[in-house]
Structures are given as C-alpha cells and as structure tokens.
Image 1 (cartoon, rainbow, N blue to C red):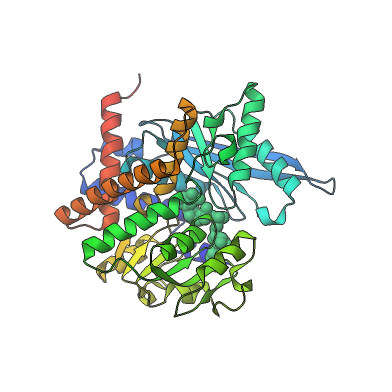
Image 2: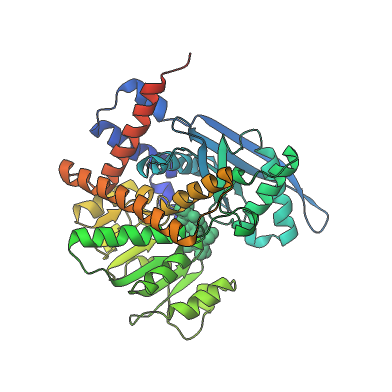
Length: 423
Ligand code: NAD
C-alpha cells in the first residue's frame, strides 16, 4: 500500500515532522538555544550493510540502522522495525520520539530505534533468523543492558527478540537477558509485555474520556492488526467498547453493530489477514476506516496516515495514537482547531516501553513480578502521565501533544543542564 509514503512525502518525512513538533514545544517553553541545538539532533547513527545467505544459496545484502537520539536520562531504549520502506529518516524520527516518550512517562531511559529495510513476510523462518542474528551482531558495538536495549516494533516479535538475546549472549559467553525486552517469558520476558501497549492505550483512553465527561465506552475503529492493533481489539472489547472496524495493510472489515472480537482475534493469532476472516463484517479500505463516525479512532499501523489530504474527513472526536507519528503536523493542527482530542503517541502508546522497563528491571534483579503487579504498576504510570499532561494542557491552553512535548523536553533539558557538557 503506497498511502503512507505519499502522505509522509507531503510533509518531508517523519523526521521533519518530529523536528516540527520539537521546535514548537521548545519555543513554547523558551528552551535556550544551546540546549535546543543539543536536543535537536541524534547522538549516534549507525548504518550497516550486511550479507545474509538465503535458502536458495544466494547472498542478499540488507541495510539496517540503529540510531541513539539521546542518552542523558539513562540507557537508550527503543524498538527494532523490519519494514520494506524503513530508512534512516524514519529511524531518526522514531529514535527522537522514544526520547520524549521515555521522558514523559518518566522512565530512566534515553531514546533509540533500529530497523532493517526488509519485508519479513517474504522471508522463510530460517532466513529471518539469519538476518536477525547478523543484524544483531552488526549493532553489538551499540547494544548492551547498560547502553542500548532494543524491543519489538513493526515486523518483529518475541521470537526475533529471543534470537537477538541469544546472539548477544553467545558473543559474551553467558546469558544476558536484560539486553533486549519483549522476549518470551520462558527466557526472562515479562508477564503482560505482549499486550502492554494496548493496555496502556486503554488506561489513557478511559482517563481522557472521564476528563471529557464522556461515557467510558463507545465505538472504536482500529487501523493496524499487529501487536498493537490486535491488543486494542482484545482489550478494548473486553472493557466494554465496541470495535466496529479493524484493518491491516491489505484492507479491513467493518460492522456497525460491532465485530466479533473473539473470532477475529483467533483468526489474527493464526496469522490470517483481517479481510480473510469470513462472516464478521463487510470489506472496508484503510482510507474509509479513518473516516468512520466512531467515538474513538486508534491508528495503530504506520506514520503519516492522517494528513492534510484526509484530515477534514476524519469524524472521530477522540484519536488515540497507537502508532508512532500517524498524524502529520498539518493534520494535527487542523484536527486540534476542529476540537478533536488527540492523545499523542508519546503518551498514548507508552505502555509498551513502560512494561519493557519493568522487564529490564526484573532481568537485572533476577526476580520476577506477577501479572497483577505488572498491570497495577503500568496503570499507575499511565494515569500519572495522563494527569500531568492533561493539567499542563489545561493550564497553558495547548494541545495534549504540545503539553506532552513540553514536559518531556523540559525533563531531558533539566538532566542535560545538571550533567553539563563534557569536557
Ligand atoms: P506489527 O508489525 O505487529 O503490526 C503492524 C500492522 O500494521 C499490521 O497489521 C500491518 O498489516 C499494518 N500495516 C502496515 N503497514 C500498513 C499501511 N501502510 N496501512 C495500513 N496498515 C498497515 O507492528 P506493531 O508492533 O503493532 O506496531 C504498530 C505501530 O505501533 C507502529 O507505529 C509502532 O511503532 C507502534 N508501537 C508499537 C509498540 C509495540 O510494543 N509493538 C509500542 C509502541 C508503539
């Protein structure tokens, strides 16, 4: 599907969007020019070209990236993406967004992101493992439990994290579970990580609906049916919301009376495309899904999906960003002017990195928490962050995105001032 690249090109790419968001909030808090210059750029960028032997004996050279945007508040943290159009511009933006996300939810981390330009669905399991182990080896100079801790993102999952953990451990000569999060529970993963992003979105959605004086339920349209989108389908429907539409990159399904979440979720867990799940709803395109008259819209796929060309047609009064950067700055301004409430990515989808933090802490102390403890701690982190962002937005009369950025940038700036510039 070409819509994401077209939409993103219109505003100069995700990194241009990330810089525009940063500049606006930096202006609003009067960030001094010296600090602005430091925080505006990624600290380290690694590009790797590496060979992988394919099943037919041929050698394919892939390109991958790991970008660390900022390390001032702690080790770098951020996912690894396998996606056909992933490039340095996208990974830079995602790394910067991780810095602000970790700061707004107040985790002791900096921000990073990684990616490989590849369609993982086109690889065999053996090729995927080869690619993962070689990419992991190439980024070992940056990776480590005290320096840079990857996690899953688009096109990667807990099996990929297991291979990364094993590859790093083989190089060290002993097991290092804390080098990566989002692992299977059997090798040091955390209870609750798989659905953590969607769980955080549910907590944030309810907190915001309560503050808006609206019912804690209603209809929901979800773009994306992967780790995040499927989690939204499962958790929001269990919490009394009605999921009326869901899609993947091939298109989606719509049922105004509500989709059968249990059937769809079983179908998705078996690896099926949304549109191939028969008898639950009518076909709908991604473009149509974004324009549905629903109470809550949750983009949970890729960047730039709501842009200047379609923002006027978006009818949902509340958008909760499961994806990173799904709304371009132009569309964001238009929607805000129209009174649409947007819970921004760096707040809305921070549940994933929060439970990744819990996983890292558990691995380091080699003492594991129950699923109930994870859910309670995650809810507390999310509620505290929503409260502070909401209060600042009200006090300053700015959007939730601007308030979240103001809080995040101020925290990283304070840490930078205290540490000083070496030497
Ligand atoms: P995933 O690979 O599990 O699923 C991605 C889904 O998006 C798939 O259903 C895919 O078909 C769909 N998709 C891909 N390109 C699309 C397009 N152009 N149009 C419509 N649909 C498209 O990925 P994920 O982990 O669910 O991540 C989804 C989003 O959430 C990303 O923006 C990611 O950065 C963000 N996110 C993920 C996590 C996490 O814990 N996995 C945490 C925070 C944010």
